[in-house]
Amino acid sequence: MNFNRRRGTIALFITLGVLLTVLTVFLNITWIITHKGHLALLVLGIIFFAALLAGVVLNTVFLVREIRRNERQDSFLNTVTHELKTPIASIRLYLETLQRRPLDEAQRQEFYKIMLSDSDRLLTTVEQVLKAGQLGQRHRQKSRTLINLETLLTECIAITRQRHHLPPESIVLEPVPGAVRLQTFGIAEDLRTAFLNVLDNAVKYSPEGVHVRCSLAISRYTFVTLSITDTGVGLPPEQFKRIFKRFYRVPGRTTSRIKGTGLGLFLVRSIARQHGGDATATSPGPGLGSTITITLPLATTETPAA
Image 1 (cartoon, rainbow, N blue to C red):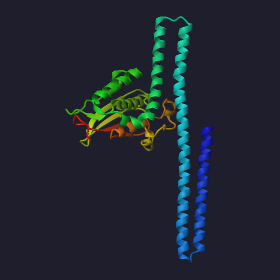
Image 2 (image 1 turned 135 degrees about the horizontal axis):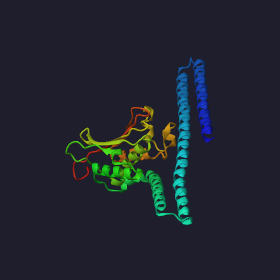
Image 3 (image 1 turned 180 degrees about the vertical axis):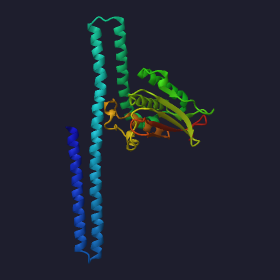
Image 4 (image 1 turned 90 degrees about the horizontal axis):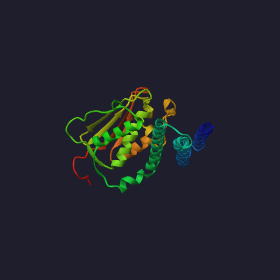
């Protein structure tokens, strides 16, 4: 119902903008015909109506963007509320069962395992929301250290495998070419968040089986490129940039059934840019997997550049 109402509101503003634009053009033409013999009034009228037309168009675009932004924020709040309530309700249910019924050791261990998984899910959601709110200040408040990216990525791969109960061959780090140590200056906690978010997405969006390949390489002599490629649902070209927006989730397809807050890739790009790099996405197409690439400055000295 809210979705239909917003679509109606957007259509109303677009229609109103078009009508005002047509009216402005009509008045401009009328002004030109009426004052074609008065050059000063003619030029003044054209400038005034051009400014008015630009204002109407910009106002319409602004209103439509605000409506869509509010829609994404409402969707985010609904998703976060669900992501918080669901694991809490699950943990409460299992705790009540453990309290009221005698269970054998196997059942108790299974319940503990499920509750730990739910608590990890809850903690991940809370950390993403907090990180999104704090990220703008963290890079100024914390000193940066020299980080070995291969070591950090290996650690993140191990965490992801354990979190999703995956075998070793599901996520593989390809051998790093050459003898150069791939390292950067940064905040290890933030980069760990970025790497884990990309790996978690690669797992979540691979419903037919997880086959993730990670690689590290030097790019343009002064940058380190981390590429994480999956064989999941893929992306159409028009989504390559949109998926990094705050609260944005790809509409339709199988992604609507996959849990998420719409903050993961926003955090990835924000962290990469705060470290002097960037994050991009590519895909051969829907159903053909996708690649998220994080680029970071290569550190070759023991002290960060001024």
